[in-house]
Image (cartoon, rainbow, N blue to C red; front, top):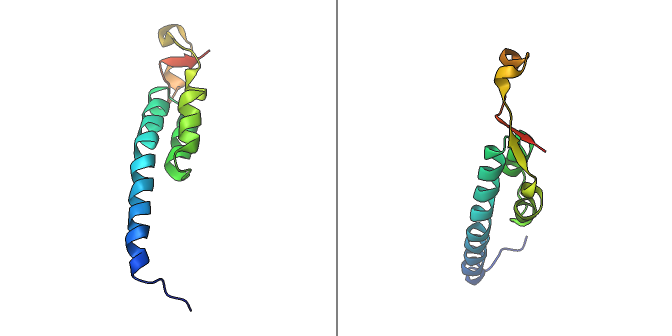
Length: 91
């Protein structure tokens, strides 16, 4: 079994920190945006899947640009039956 020499541990630490510094802001922005838009599927996906910030960037640049309009739930007959109702709808 080959053991990693100790001089490579510093390089590994630097790489891990660099990846974390890169992915955490992208992940935070994507999570925030998907939560604000009521997109539970995207929110869960971003929590569970590690993509190194690539899918988060794609989501923020392309997929989160879909227009959103407000909905009036007071006139909806199923108003009380909606468990996870959001006041926004993707157009």
